[in-house]
Structure formats: structure tokens, C-alpha cells
Image (cartoon, rainbow over all chains, first blue to last red; front, side, top):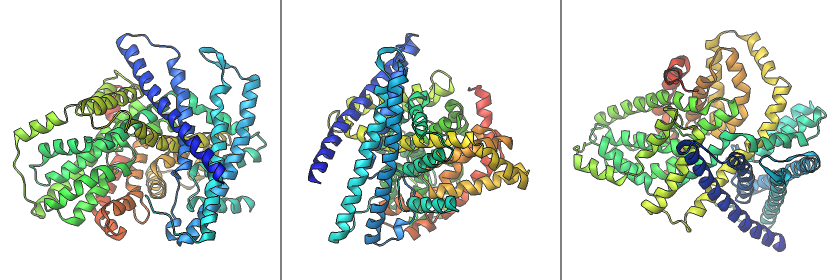
Length: 171
Length: 426
């Protein structure tokens, strides 16, 4: 367990520096493009598709971070009525379920990326980069989320067995 | 039978707090399995996140909103509006309404407004002798006010999901949004007079000081609204300008935030929200595509058509349905899940998709406040340390006013659409 946790927090550091660089690049590139287009009536052709791919990457990296911090959007209307112990139990079940679904999505996205690798094309305008480089974030994202959901369900089970007090509430 | 059982099981898991994207993904996977299509088709649809140009506005505006929330902008904005409107009866309440509306337009996620601005305004309201219940209701309600103003994130998301022009939606929300602020302001003025709140004198020197203080924030709404309404820039371009402008102003001019200490943290924080929204959108793209292929909206439509043919009745039922949705779901997931289903149905009843967008957002705004589970009620109870039952009672008059506004917005489509036509926005 300790080993997995060390890997997870190492991963979180890498993740966070990638996110910060991508957001910074996005802000600068998007601004540059607006200035070029509206002031100089020109533009760099590859910036637009590049920005769109950044959105895809940020979506998955953001979702990975949300999984680690347990901050996904949810409809949580029952857990307010549960006792602390039941709350942990329900968190174990929902995390385990989420891990299983992330595995299925991981599996499906590996098929998708392998297909694209074989038959898919190159990136528009970066002719030497295959498009599956960009798409690879999808299986990576689901794999990481699966592991994190698993870790959470293990944590909650351990907490129930040890009879730990409930977590602090944050809205 | 099996479908019913697994449906109930999923519903239970969702209500117990399974992330919504997981629930939607399961439904999509099951649907594709059942019709014998390889599940990698779900992923093909997900990749559309990378081919939708308008989505770029979402991370950029979210980042800008988080930057504004973390800086001293809320303080400066409140000072400005206080100098401008503080002298009127109910003036401070109007300040709260206008400042929160402006702020929510930028931050989109309404909880942020209650925590950042409400926390600032509530003590001042109490100090100026506004009744406690009135003040609590006011800051709770103001938390979702402003969703109809550009560049609000929910409007952008509605545009993306419904396939409508975001520029048009931005224009359409303006008049209904202003009407909302005006109605609530009238109530505040009345309350200010009946509660005998002492008034402060207008001071030109104070206005001048406040204007000088907020001189870099004042151009922001004009940049966005003017730029888009004038057809000079698109919503996505406005997002690019806003993010860059806010970064420069907060870091290098006001120096509220440090480039290496605060900005990376805010980038991460804002991307957690962006990831949370977009991963739901990603999984929903697959499901929506399936539903449309299977003509599910059409089947619902046929069913509705059989039982009613009145547009008026449809709109009433739509409002009730959306209020329930808004009470149970947050605005982003509600948009992603519900909008693809209602747009074709509403269209067949002759409701313009842009008008529908305004109705939709207005309903969700009220849903945020609707007992027993409206999200803002809990955030407010948490932030101001009041029992939820107190918050329920305090928001009731406001819900009444918002419902009146909803009726007007729903049954007078011109309110939403005339500016769009006037400016000829496409």
C-alpha cells in the first residue's frame, strides 16, 4: 500500500506541473492568436487545433486531480442522512463501482487508441506526429482514475475496520 | 425487469454519491453493448472534446473567474458599488445584488459567489441594520444571480451542448437578467424603507476613490459585453482576452497574487472544476449520440404529443420538470444530461432554442434555492453558520420573486429574443 501511495503522490506532482504548463501555454497561445487575428489580420494555422487538443488533455488531467481530491460532480442527496459508519461504507461501494467502470472505459479506450495507431492518421498540420499521441491521454486518464478509486475504497474499508472517526465535512 | 432493476440500482448508486460521469458512462456502455456496437465507440465520441472549438472558452473563463475570486477584486467591486448605490433606500442590498450578479457572471459556479462575496457582504448588511432574515436570504439568492449574464459558464455550456450560437445566448440573457436584478432591487428598496435602515449620504469623492481603486476591473465587462455585442470578437476570443488580462492585472498591476506562489495553485484549482465538468460532458457525448441514433427524444416527443398539444401546457410542465432537476443536480451536469433531450422537443412546440436556454438557466437558478436540497441553501448554511431551516425560511420571498420572473421570461419570448434580432447577432 505504501508503495502505491508513493507512486500516486509522485504522479500527482507530475500531473500538477503538466497542468500548470498547459494552462499557461493555453492562455498565452489563445491571446497571441486573438491579437494576430484582430490586429494583424493573420494567424498561426496550427494554434486552433493545438488549443482544442489542450482542452482534451486538461479535461482528463483535471478529472484525474478531481478523483484524487474526491471532488467529482455528483448528485449526493442520500449521504446526508447516513450515519458516519454507513457513509464510509457507501463511499467504499461507490468507489469500488467507479473503479470497475473506469476499468471498462480504460479497456475501451485502449482498443480505440490501438485502432487509431494502426489506421488513424497524423495530426492535421503537424505532419510528423501521429494523432494517437494526443489520444493516449484517454486510456492513461482512466487507468489513473481507476487506481485512485481503488485506493479510496481500500482506505475507507481500513477506516471502517479500525473504527476511525468520520471525515471532515467540506461542501 | 432487468432494465428496471439495474436502473434502480444505478439511481441508488448515484444518490449515494457515485461521481456522475461514472453513472453516465455505465449507461452509455450498457446501451452500446445491448445494441452490439463495440464500446470503443463511446471513446470515439469522447475524442470530440478535442474537436469542439467553443470548449476552449471553458478553461479560460474558469481560470479568470478563480483568479478574480482569490484576489482583492471582490472587495474593490463592493466598494465601487457601495459608493454608487449606497445612498439609495435599500442601497446596500442593491449593492449586494449587483456585485454578486457581476461576480457570478465571471465565476459561473455559484457557490464561489456566496463564499467569496456573501461572506464579505453579510456582516456589512447586519452592521447597517438590515434585518437578519432579509440579509441571509439576500446573500443566498444572490449566489446564483448573474447566471444569465455573459460570460457565464453555464451559458457557454448550454451553447455547446445544444449546438446554439454562444454569442446569441450571451445577448439573449441580458434583458431577462437585468429584469431579475431590477425586481429584486425593488423588493430591497421596499424592505430598506419598511425596516427603517439608516441611509448614508452620496459622496462624489468616495465614488472617485472607488473608481480609481477598481480602475483596472471596470473595463472587463465592457471588453466582453461590448466586444461580443458589437460583433468584434467571439465568445472564445473574449475568453482568451479575459484570461490574459486578468492574469496581467492581478499579478503585475494590483499585485494581489504572486506569479509563482498563487497562480499555479489557482490554475490547478480551476482545472479540477474544468475536469469535473468536461469528463461528464465527454461520457455524455457517447450517450447522447446513442440516444439520438435510437430516436429517444422523438419517442418522448410522440408520447408528449399524444397527451397534449398545447404549447402553454408544455411550458408549464417543462418548468416544473426543470425546477426538480435544478434542485437535485448542479447546473453543469443538468445542462449536459437534460439539454440534448429537451431541445428537439421544445423546438417542435415552436420554442426557439435560444429562448429555451434562458428558460432553462432561469429554472436551474431557482432550483439552486429550492428546499429541501437546493445546493446554495447548504453552502449558505455552512458559510454563515445558520441552521438550514433558517436559510429555507429566509429565501422564501426571494423564490417568490424569482418565480414571477420565470413566468415572465417563459411566456414572453421577445424578452430574450428582441436584442438578438436588434443587433443581428449570429
